[in-house]
Image: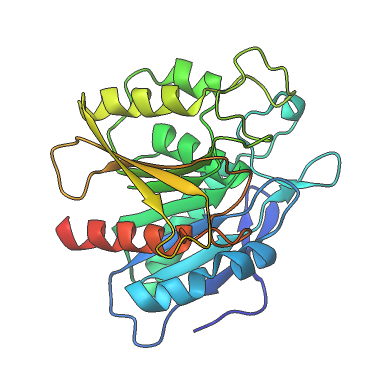
Length: 276
């Protein structure tokens, strides 16, 4: 069932919106995947470039594209604690949790296999959920997202949920090295290496295996370092696709990289649904 028009959901005195896609013949208690757009972006555009409807067909889950509310500048966002959103009062954590419970209930979807991915601000939100609501969103896959310093400080011992991350080393929006002094104006946030170390500690992982991925016929000269951290399970429940020279993109979606982030995310969530 494809919802081309936005559906409405009333929460905390606001009418929120979302798009929903359920593949034909989806079995009861199928997984549910949230796909969150980036700052200033929207659900419909993210649905288009991520191709997650097709991924849902391929791997057998329902997918929802929630719409962020507008900030005081009129731009859609997720409230993750950016410095310039200090006066925003919307509680997106509660909204997304309430929407998850609503969809699980009315569409008979699995509350134990409800996952979240997102681009940029949406990826930041996924990290927030991993810290604050790991029993609701039981695995995440942030794309060019980061972990805000406040969340790192507030949750020194997070629950070790499965995480699959994509980050570009030349990203000029989400700086790979982080921004501890808030030079960019977003608020302080961690670098990717520090984020992975944080989740390694949660998983009790001390080792990682790195595979360098290149295009099979060499027509794309870029490379990707795939980090798999030892979490005591196969596949690893903590992975990073480090896009060498990559920018602020959804790999294989908003760029032409040979690595298809959406398919990898679909596989990751599908594997988790089978083994848990």
